[in-house]
Amino acid sequence: MSEHITLSYRRLFEVRILHHYWLDQGATAFDLISVPRKKEQRLQDYDVRSLLEIMPSPATVKLLKAHRAVFCKTALGFITAVPEQAVISGNTMFEFIVTVRDQAFCNYTALTLKPQRLIEIQSGDEQKVRRFKENVPVLSNLTGVSRGTGNSRVLFLSREIPAASANDLAEYLILSGNTLKQLSGDQPGATAHTLTTQAKKNPVYVHQGDIPALTLPGDSGQTRRGIGLQDGIPDNVYALIHIHAQRPGDTAFSLIDNQGQAKTNPPVFEIRFKNRSTIRQYINKNSRSLEFEESEPLPLTFFGNSGSKRKPSETLVKPVTSNSKVIKLVSEIFV
Image (cartoon, helix red, strand yellow):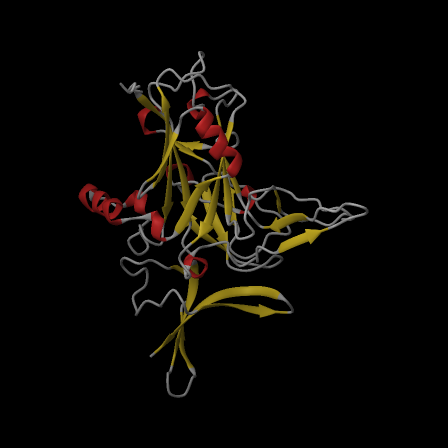
């Protein structure tokens, strides 16, 4: 007679990955949509699996197996669960690889102008080629920030949005007090467009500060950002998600209780991708002459229209440059 073992599982954590191109209503951010039913319907229709592929890294696959844990993709992101009696060490870290599925993703997603260049280095007598990739964000509950308080507190895996810097580039997000701004071009001299004056009531979008500093062998004072690619991390990685079992100083971000078991109320983390904003140019389709140009960048959205004229396709976006410097991003609309 075969032996049957029944395990009761408890959710360890959930990660929700929301993209505002698919959620916002024109100029109204998803979080500020005033009709609850509309917000609910927007989430019901949303499926991140058509945009991004999320998989545990090879090391995390082994870790999940060792704990008899399960990894489950959902329309909003993914969930990880463990047996109720599982004990997890406080220094445990789960790593997940994000790659892009939607070919248009980088057209309508902010902060995708800088290429994610792959670098391979074989130095000295080393036989192994070391791989690096520029401009890959690392999103983690160890460094993430929250918005709101009590039951309304939302845990984001992005770091706090930084203040302005002299070397900021087009689309960089800037936090000044409670005002969130976005640069329309490269510094110096770029215009900072105000997104909201109530940043603490808005989500923390993935931003330039989520990309770690990167030093390559032989670099001499050069500023780079990116990651080293460990074994099992594919060349086409777009982002990494690191979920640590414990976060010192803020137990809301931790996965486990003092006994090392999954918490009764497991954390729900959020990743928010900002939709791109562009200056709309209306061009005569016959003469190719410019008929009208908006004075301010307007967000690209699938639902609604942030402007008063015809909205652009997400595919007709291009940077306008001068002396290798991005001046503005435009969407061309032929009329």
